[in-house]
Image 1 (tube, protein in one colour):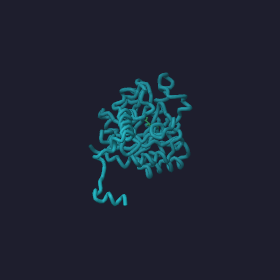
Image 2 (cartoon, rainbow, N blue to C red; image 1 turned 45 degrees about the horizontal axis):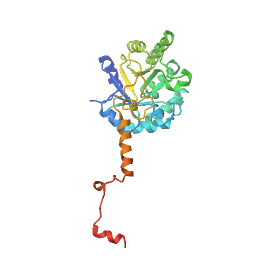
Image 3 (cartoon, protein in one colour; image 1 turned 30 degrees about the vertical axis):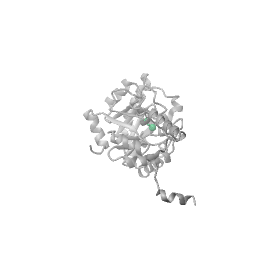
Image 4 (tube, rainbow, N blue to C red; image 1 turned 135 degrees about the vertical axis):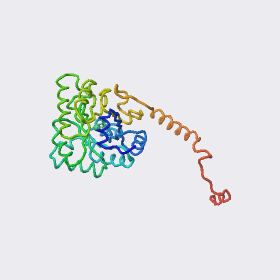
Amino acid sequence: MGKVSTAKLKQMKSDGTPIAMITAYDYPSAKLAEEAGADILLVGDSLGNVVLGYDSTIPVTIEDMIYHSRVVARAAARSFIVTDMPFLTYHGSSDAVLRQVARVMQEGHAHSVKMEGGREIAGNVETVVKAGVPVMGHLGLTPQSVHQIGGFKVQGRELAQAQQLIEDAKALEQAGVFAIVLELVTEQLARFVSEQVSVPTIGIGSGRYCDGQVLVYHDVVRYASPYRDKKFVKTYADLESIVRNGISEYVREVKERKFPDESHVFAMNEELVPHLYG
Ligand code: KIV
Ligand code: NA
C-alpha cells in the first residue's frame, strides 16, 4: 500500500472507498494502528482526556501536541498524520497562527493540522492552506467550545442549526480544507453535508454516510478511556481486562514469591559464591 496523501483521500471519496482514521498518541499505538491499515492517524487533543488525565481538551498545550505528534510521526511510514491545533492557537492574527502551525509541522513532524470551527476561522484556514499546509476542518460538536455549547450535545437536530453547519462546511471547503470531521451530527445532516462538499467527511457519532470514520484509539480497544460507553463508540477489544488481569497476577506472584522463578535468573560460578561471604 502506498503512502496516504490528501490527493489519495480525495480519490477515496470519489471512488466510494471508506477512509479509516483513528487517534494515536504514542509510538506503540501509532505503530499498531498503521499496521492494522488505518489511513489517517489523528494526534487528537483528546489526548488531554485520554492520556493526560484532564477532564477536557482545553488545558492541552501546543507543547503537548508537538511532543505527542513527533512520537507518532516516528512510527508512521505510510499513514497520513493529522495533528490537532490546541485551544486558541489558531484564532489570532495570520502571523500568530502561522507561527503556531509552523511549530506543529516542524517540531511535531505532522503532515497536516486540524482546527475546530466554521466561518469564524475560515480566514485563518485559508491563510494556512495558502502557506502550503493541509488543514482538516472539524464541525458539529467541537470539544474546545464545550463551555459555550453547554455540554456534549448532538448537533443538527433543529433545522436552523443544521443550516448553520452546512454554511460552515461550505466555507471550510471554500477556504481549502482537504477533509472535514463531523462530530456528533445527526445522520441525515452528515449525509447531506457529505453529498454537498467535494472533500471527504470523516464522522464520529455522525452516522453511516460519511466518507470515513474516526474513533479514539482507547475507545476502540477499551483501554482506560473516558468515553468508551457512549452510544457512538464500538469497542473491538478489551485491553483493560487483559492489562488488569496481567498486572494483578504479576503483583500476586511477587507477593507470593512465585516470580521470579528459576527460569528468570542469572547465575555465577557456584565455586565463587563462598567468597562473597568472606
Ligand atoms: O481529538 C480528537 O480525538 C478528535 C476526534 C474525536 C475527531 O478531534
Ligand atoms: Na480534537
